[in-house]
Picture 1 (tube, helix red, strand yellow):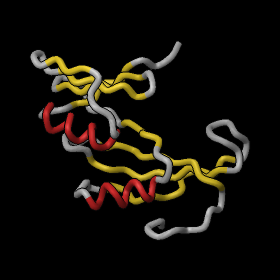
Picture 2 (tube, helix red, strand yellow):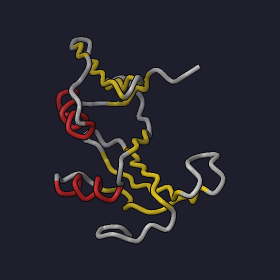
Picture 3 (cartoon, one colour):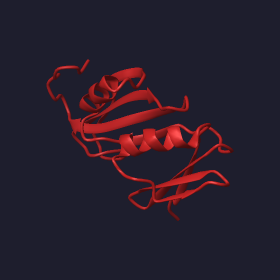
Picture 4 (cartoon, one colour):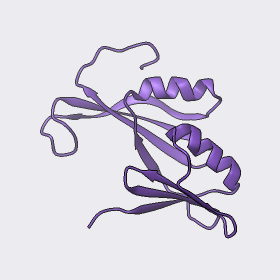
Length: 131
């Protein structure tokens, strides 16, 4: 069994589609309006934006969470929680052994919280913007 689709609340489909198109750097795979559905393909998992969906907390992997947050802040995206290490992977059960898991949280155009995640070499020196 594998995850095939996740739905996310979107009050304004056009606004949400524009936000996610820019965030994900991909165009929607399909738009059905009416009834009000926008789909994105995230490497085989469909992200569905629709007004009737519940709010979900999505976690998106990015190469460097700090750089991503800096870029998003520059575009006016609200940062809910700044980048920080949440876990050090020592045994490889939840991520590559020898990496630190960095997370930050932002707010999308519809008021949903999104997590941004990077797994970086453990003890990587603090870089500009990284706290």
